[in-house]
Length: 122
Image (cartoon, rainbow, N blue to C red; front, side):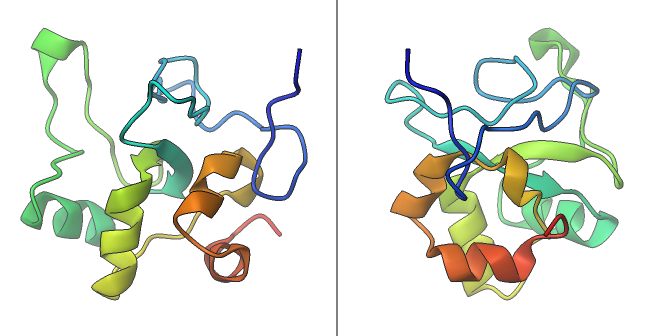
């Protein structure tokens, strides 16, 4: 079996178990072909980013009990969709990331040097 890698080519680290994140709800930003939204980047959520995200139609902070989603709070980590990260970059609102917990599929969307600029764990 192939080892799951982060954007640095190292083993992918967990992003968040509380709240439980990831497309597969396994705490990691693993992004395989069935994850078409490429939820691959592990972000550090700030109040500013959560407000921005909600304003562009991606409400991460409002709990949705019907989906067993408690909502993301400032200071928590979350696997964000790659295209949403690219949108935030273009808008000058990209959040800081945990690069060791960001899946290698993000390299399909964003250059490694840019990801390194936003990394808080390098």
